[in-house]
Image (tube, rainbow, N blue to C red):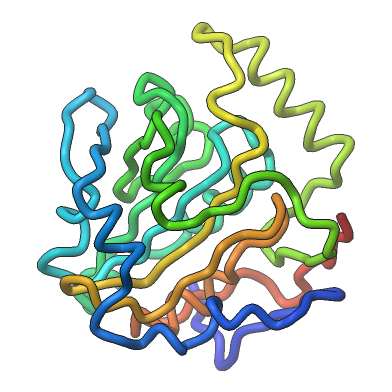
Length: 226
């Protein structure tokens, strides 16, 4: 797997969001403090607190819309390509958080090939306390990590819901996700709140702020309009 010299990031028609900048390279963020005691569950149903994830080490935290969302699936497929050795060398945790039931975790990991840490916030407490958006902004933006178009992607998502032995739509479809680079403690290095289902923080940016060796995800990322 080759390392890239500089990330390729393209966006369409998006106004600058100061909360996505390095402005948050500070020792404290009030939203994080509010969320620290919120419960999470792992794939076995075991409970821990949100603050446990970054108390002692830096962490890349990804909040996805839900495990059925095709854009989330394809984003996590690229997260799965980050070698564990890169994270270990930087002493960084990579963590995905979903709003689905913990019973869906194993199937989602099998589907995406994701082998890093993953938890669920079924009541969306962390999403709310971190100010993650509800609904989709009309602003257009593109993700270099989404490969499917809207029609085929939605069809695949519905088909996966129908085939699932635990048939449900796995959370509030209006809930958007986001990403943070945080820790140790409440030091927030990067914060991004998704405006819509395509508005993922480029993984190259997350690795940069976490000081993890870059990963190459392709030369020509697609630009998708919402």
